[in-house]
Amino acid sequence: MHAQVIPLAGRVEDAPLAASVAPPAVAAPTPEPAVQSRREPDRARNRRIAAAILLPCLTFLVVLAIWSGLRNTVAPELPTPLETWDHAVTTLADPFYENGPNDMGIGWQLLYSLGRVAAGFGLAALVGIPLGFLMGRSRNVQFALEPLIQILRPVSPLAWLPIGLLVFKAVDPSAIFVIFITCIWPMILNTAAGVKAIPQDYLNVAAVLKLGKVEMMRRILFPATLPYVVTGMRLSLGVAWMVIVAAEMLTGGIGIGFWVWDEWNNLYVPSIILAIVIIGLTGIVLDLAMGAVQSRLDYTKR
Image (tube, rainbow, N blue to C red):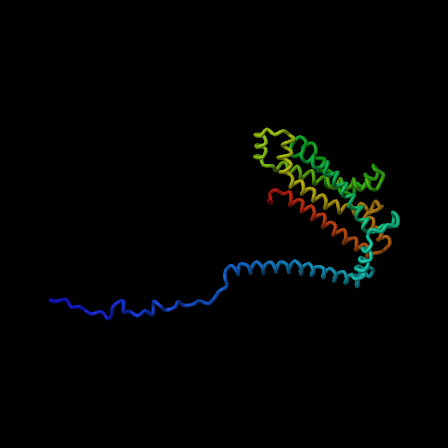
């Protein structure tokens, strides 16, 4: 038998080439991922900027509305926001005038208060930071000082004002003494906490290198404790700025606190509102300055 040969319909080379040469389907153009990734952070940043501007403006509008409502209902003696603004413009036009010790511009009053705070704050740092190091390094010093600190720390700073007046018999030293008492406790406690938080590995390295007490303080203890020290100083400064206003109200003389009390005695409320705003803004500036120092010296954030 002969095998039957079935002829093919065509050779491979004769097959139509349409499938091989047909152009591929073109998809719809889509944005590049890089462009999308750039747009999303831009939108998020714009939303944050808008919120940071609009929300505080809304808060201030609510405060102004409450202020106007109080003036029109329960406290007609309050000046209107526009009256207060006009008085602020007039007062701040010449903040450093001087017509004798009892008639000085608000700029001088603010500088006198800042000077007292700086003096008391500096003295507290000179005393409190070394005591904090001693408490952190020595258990005996901690046992000796901690009960006294825990007793005196909750006492209101203004309770010390009569003692200051009795001892120093003058306004400025008494106010500085009150600021000193206000500032020293957070500095001592935060510094001691920072010394206790130093990793043991640091102390082991110092022992291996056979560092003396001075070198160990300069190279190990002080740099490692610095964030805690600055935190204590920041807390102290914020409280001290609040206390000096109250202390000056009681002692009289020159200062932003005395200026508020004197304007109250004259029943000139726009000056009091202006002083409140200036005190608040000054406190913000002081806190931001200490925050910048804290961020600059905090090695844990580098």
